[in-house]
Image (cartoon, rainbow, N blue to C red; front, side, top):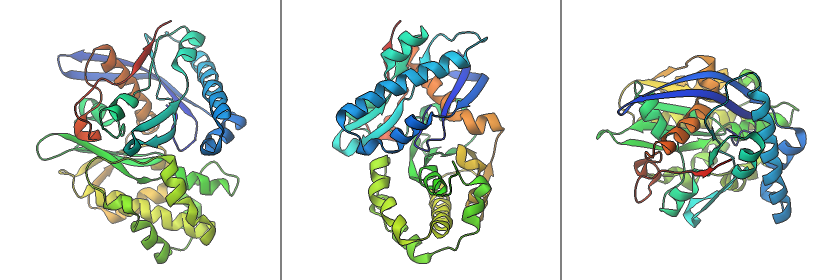
Length: 341
């Protein structure tokens, strides 16, 4: 799993079992691999790359993925398949396209393991957002919670509505913005939210953020890096970094708390890198009466990798792994493409 927070590639070795429509899982091993500096730089600037440069990154990232898999699996049982999210570069479902780089054919041949990848494009072709995709797994593997929130590069929500239909949507940008701001201090992220905690809340900036048109949309909706660059990063020059970090942390907290108002039930499972940001979690809790449940560290850090592995498992069972009730597509579908060895 490689996400927009750019904090590394998450690998999880998972085992699944099913009995009719009941599923269980076990994470046997998990590890995060940091990006090489040259790949991290290209990923962070992917929107500005030329066609040949993007193609070079597409394949270079594939070879890096293969190296991490081979290293990770040393001394471990080899899995039946690899389920690869790839790395999202462009995401504009309203224009009927999305692009996740990381070539499945390269990954399959360099590891000797079949690869399932490209989960999003079929849903976009059916008129869906192609995101978020993990709600299908949330419903089947974490059904004891009425809702789950992932505080990743982009924060998103997954929940059951009053009719029992699984819903989900992107709430707002999260670590994608905070990590970029931390980078101005030479840091990969703001440890415990300490920089943000020391900043001043700017009500003018908070209002500008809250007035973005995306937040007036309803139903299926998702965000991409292009949107963040156009609508968030344009304001960076107008405020000092500490002020922006403090204000944007409050923005995430208020937006997340607002999204939770439509959830029936009080216990909400929180995962993703943002859970390690103590100040962000503190501000979310200050803005909601819901019980924000923080699970064990492995679940916090590797739930997204687990769920994309599970999407691959459902693919092999020929079960729907993308829900139209979440993405807005014309029907449920079995997303993914299989590369054999």
